Length: 257
Image 1 (tube, helix red, strand yellow):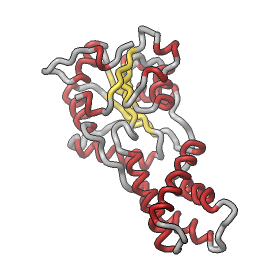
Image 2 (tube, one colour; image 1 turned 90 degrees about the vertical axis):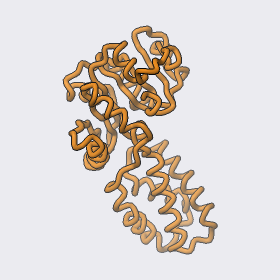
Image 3 (tube, rainbow, N blue to C red; image 1 turned 180 degrees about the vertical axis):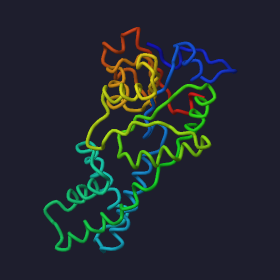
């Protein structure tokens, strides 16, 4: 197995180009959220803004910053336990945690406000991670096919991908949108490779999640992977010690160019 530090970078060639050439990569299968897009930050902004709005409109007997902090903690618990729910439902569940047994008489109004507040959440897109658009432009220059494998609603994934298509002068980017009530698994990674007509063993996976990206892609047959903010010590020994599997750990997708 290889880490980024074990390959000497050439000044004339981006790191990603070296990986592609030295491993006969014929296509890329890419995670979208938190690998190419600042999706966590997008969620945090909306969640905190909703908490501020609730304090201001319902006159809660708590400092605004304290309520924001408590709701942030409750939402963290929600993501750990039920991470595949729409944002408005997650926030309502977190609000249930906050009030617990002290539900106010007008609690239905709280829930209506939350639903209304998040109406436009899925109409926008998180911002690009620095360098992510340059990675796609480089693939276009090299004429290497690529596809996004995303765990989000189809329409929201389409909106995100369209922003990258604008950066690529209208070039269409294929994507595999895994329903929000399901999880990305070996089948979705294999399907994504099939959609760009590249054998999964000849693809390079780029993702940030061990359980949604790295492990299922390996299970599907991928042998070359870039793990954003990865830690090889977290891999199962049978994968970490397998010489046929190559994993490069980088801090950000921008490090590939």
